[in-house]
Length: 578
Image (cartoon, rainbow, N blue to C red; front, side, top):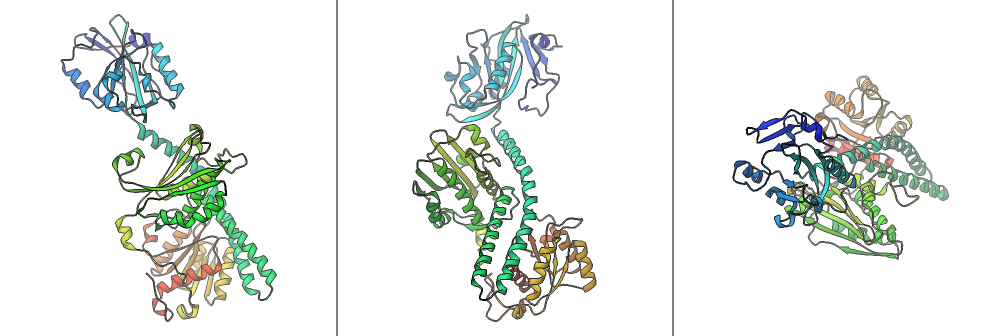
């Protein structure tokens, strides 16, 4: 840790003499006094690290320098180490604004009154050590305002001597850096999550390919059997197991913040009420679930399934925190006033909040700080992925996750989401009914090009689409797909995986094919999806199918994509719900 020069070293420095010797400053010369945030953006060369004055005292307040001290937005304090306990003898108005104390509450007291329960003892020890050595010090320390609200303080303290080197005062400046500290901590947490997410996403991609092979072939096998009821049931159980494994993969990918969510406008009150029956069964007889839902709650845009999963994870944690039973409250509210928005460190706007409140064992501050870390758990054999996945989902939904907890009193977990804009509301929602019409009625005989680096996945899609009456071509890479089109001519639909090894991924393939066929229908398949990186890709509609998919879903998506390209071939009686 950086440390400022001691008294003898400071006084031996070349002095910056001011006012014909009335005061002499000792420049910092690029030396750091500690690990605190520097408002200069650099260590600084010319600012004073310590000073010597010829006329001690605080009575002369008639000159411009005193006016400048009182007019600055930088909080400043002077303390007197020659009095018992080094009390504050001067505090400017900016300091009173920062701390919310009155002048009478500040003068005559040691600055430790700003410390509180979460103030780092190591930072306090660093300050005390520097004062004993009569040297400058700079630290970031957690302080508390008169209201009890904590804030991060970039504190600088420097000594003031007389001409003979006797210590007269300590000068200190403060700066509220709470928002910067929160941003730094959020960034570090995001880096941690991203590192593990990279591994998780890579494994999940391969796992999804395996699941696709299992569920797809089982579905085809089940369709080929007729009266063998026991075999059908066994295959059905196997398909169910594969789908459950797929849900596990979606959980892992949500944690990795690469799961492709399907956000829709929904009302959190409605979601909670409809999901409450399952919540009651999950929580058990010992837990009393209470709903406190704000009437007229605005809608937000989130993925309903993942929201239910997040709520369930949080409630399971609440249940486990109350082994003897108790009451858990699920509440909703609105944040729309400037004071609360600032208190939650949100950007201006309107937000809806869903919170889970328990009166269980609570968590220590150290546990709260680590609660969203992957694999961190206090449950013994637990996985430690629950809150980590909740954190990933909320972040990906442009929201904020907050945890307040006190040991022995309980925990409140808030998920905060922005409400939908008026423009989003005006767009409306499309019907969710499954589209089910015959291939012949809508498509006729169309050509589909299937592109996937995994042979089994590729052959599964190839075989099913061929059985449905399509003309099907296949390729194992983007480069090979371009060769196939060059050899056989234009195709009606390109069905390609996004993630493929080699020089061309699925999105790049779409760009290349659309250079030749701008109106080609496109269907993408992937286990996870990052942002579409190129403007050309988003210039025309693209439908995405999430792995593992059912082959019946593949058929419906292919039909829907081709129907958009060939609307005149729509089946009689079909009504588009757009």
